[in-house]
Image (cartoon, rainbow, N blue to C red; front, top):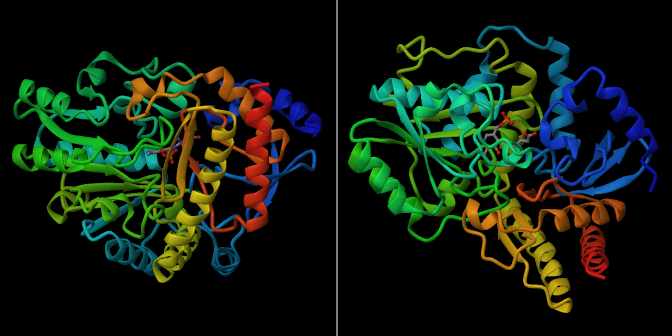
Length: 430
Ligand code: KE4
C-alpha cells in the first residue's frame, strides 16, 4: 500500500491545524506513522486519498452502526436539505426525536438535544449540581466523558493516549471538585462518599467502558452504584455516548437492567451528524432553563439536518431489534477468529467483548480497570495496528479505545479480518 497523498496532506494540515487533526486521537501519535486521510466511505469500507480500501472497525468511533452512507439516512438528509439547514427555532422533528428517545430508554422522561457527547456530559453534571446544590462529582480512572474541564482528571481515551489524563488548562478549583475511583471498585466509591458527606452531586461513569479499551462492569458494580446513589441522594449518570443505542435499543441500562437518573448520548444518536443529548428524571430535567435555573443552550441544538439523520437512525434501530443479535454474532466471529490465532501462537492476550464492542489487549492480565489496562504492551499494539492497516483493516489508532462493529460487515469481510489478524499477530511475533 502507498500512503503518499495522505502523508503530503498531513504535512500540509499541520501548518494550519494543531497536530494536523481536529481531534487528537486521529493523529496516530501513539501508534506512530502519519494518519491516513479518508476520501470516502460506503457500507463497511473506507477509501483513503491514495485509493486504498479498508474494512472499517471504528465506524467514526461508534456512529456508523448501520455502515457508512446508509441509504435511508442519505434519503432523509436529501429530503431535509430542500428545507434549508438550520432555523434556531423549534421544529416538530425535535419532538418526534425526544419522544422516540424516551420510548427507547424508559429512564429518560425528558431529554435536551445538544451538539456533542462532551456537551451532553457537561450539561448533565451541571444539572446534577443545580438539582442537588452540591459541588463534587465522582468519575472513574480511565473513563472519558469528553473534554469538559471537570472530566479531564484521570481521563481515558485520547487524553491518556496523548499522555495528558490530567490536562493543562484545568484549574485546581475545578479539579478539587472531581473525585476519582478505580473502575469496578465499589469500596473506593463508598470511601469517597463517606469522606464527603452531602457534598457529592453525582457519580458519572461509562456503564461499559470504551475509553480504556473495552472494559465490562463486574457483577454487582452497577447495582452497587445504584444503591449508593439512592441511599445518599446522589444522581447516577450513565454516560452512554458510546453504549447508547449500540448495546441494545435502551443501551447498557437495558442490558444490565439498571435505571440511571440521567443519561448522556452522542455518536449513534446523530446518525453521523453532530448530535448529543442528555435526559432522565423529569424532576431533574425541569431544573434546566427555561423551566429552571440551570442554564444550557446551543445555536444548532436540534438542528433539522441532524435530527433528520438521527431520527432515521434511531427509527431503524427501534424497528429492527434483531440488529443487536446480528451485531453480537458478527462481533463474536471476529473475536473468535482472533482467539484462534492467539491459541495457535500460544499467546495469552486478553480480549474483552460485549455486543458490537471489543478490544484486543496486548497483555496477559485480565483487564478490569485502568491499572490493568495500562499493563498492555503499547509498542507491540502499534506494530499490530500498522500490520492490520497494511492488510486493509482499519482499527482504532490506540490501545485504549474500543472497536465498534457495523451491520455492513459481510462473511467475506469476516474471512479477510480473520486472515489479517492471524498474519499480523504471527508477523509481529516472528
Ligand atoms: P464527543 O464530544 O467526542 O462527541 O463525545 C465525548 C465522549 C463522551 N463520552 C464517551 C463515553 C465518549 O466515548 C466520548 C467520545 N469518544 C471518543 C472516542 N473514545 C471520541 C473520539 C475522539 O475523541 O476523537
